[in-house]
Length: 302
Image (cartoon, rainbow, N blue to C red; front, side, top):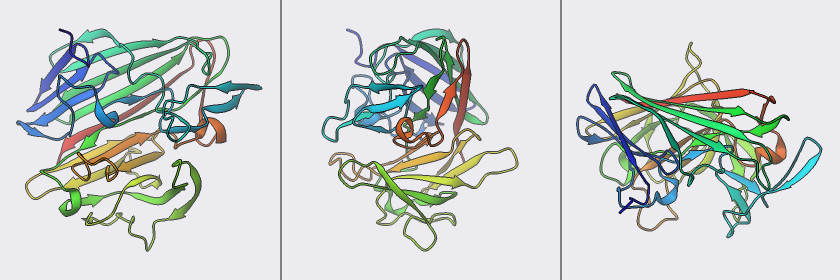
């Protein structure tokens, strides 16, 4: 029998262990010294709720699946039909091909062929690497077409620092602005400063009753251009870092999912927020004949 997520690629180093799947190149498992850092999924499951999946060549939602680019109108399939959106790209359920697998790293590739709604051929590549610094993930896209291609990317890990609920976990989120969305379709309608709101976690504090399904931006960065999100539980903590290409962090506490509500916290690095293909905000244009974009992020214990 083939597992629902396909072949499993295990890597390990410095006490860390990770498992990446053939389906979607998803990060199914991540632990340190046997302690989970990721609320993933079992080998005999499909990835529920986007767990560990890569969001390429766009993250989040595109309203009505419709957008215009290069003077042409495009219609994507509505993969979130309840809200009338095209959601989370074209790669999350695809069969990725193994490029290289070592003890501590695995690289997988996928060619997204030109298709209705996205008429460009784009090569996708992801490298998962473990070291004493934890997990580093590098997602790369290369435009193999003869015309410019629209692009954005993200990832969907659910982080954990202990048995849920998340309310007693301490969160540090270095973001000054929150996107406001429509309640029915979760599409951007504005933005606000987090100053003085329940979503201001620039100073570490417990999550308590805060509900998250929000995109945050204006990230505070270190000298290397990295922004760092920290979670601290009663016995352990972790840090997720993102590089300078990541303009947005989507946080999601899954309050609308009965069997996993507030069990863990999704922290999704994104180069652009929802509807970027329509608004152009933070949208990347991949140059024809080899134009490339890379994004890196990682997770380590505190």
